[in-house]
Image 1: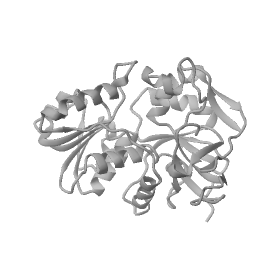
Image 2: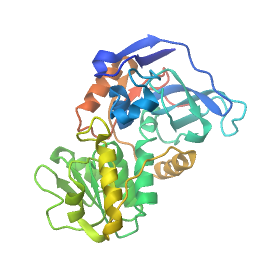
Image 3: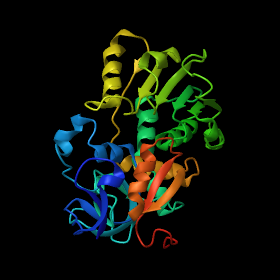
Image 4: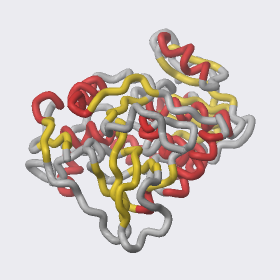
Length: 335
């Protein structure tokens, strides 16, 4: 099969290459998916660069143990393991996986896959796992968002942010999105009640108070964000950006949040999203009901994966970047 591989950590154009390798085989509890599309996610960038270094014991000290990136895919089941009960060959699925989606085939645990929404293309569906699951878990499970609450989404035009705006609106919140001016129309179009252009206004210093802040950028300190929180408000830090090659921006903020929380009335709640079939099924219901729509900035083909990751690394992506892989990806899905 064709796959984008890397043998060392580094910039995408320096280390990524298109190669012909052996296709994987499904284990007892796995499904083998013929990949039609895969999306670019923050974890792909971290794994590509081997940073923060605290990741290295798990992914490889000097070189990556698994030489294929790609954390979220959509495609068609090609084969199933003997213990798989939810899927059959020919089923259209989408999944959040551990590694390996930038390839023609990938093995996915049955527990992290779900039937694709009927109203999405493969490219749209590939943008949902990881990003939408993160937004759903952050708002529903960690933030416990309630109707009428004032919710601020920092990074509202990004991959997680575009889903977070829509999901917060679904739960009945009054949503403020923070983004650049050029993305204001997009953020309003997906449901934001208010939009702040961060180049012109500082949401942490304008006097507004929010019941929940979902921070997908990490460009302001915890203490700055707390100024914009209601006395019993909840702050959810969800970004690994920032200085810190050893532990990363997210872990530093998470440690600070956990250390501060016992001594203040506000709640600082870092979390690590997980991929489950149940959450994808919940997202499918929202998508098919027209409550949530994936925002795709651009679609690349497989041999343009380095270009896609280079674009991601420069920041300011609107929604998701997607790699179109399978020969059926741009054709109509079969009934």
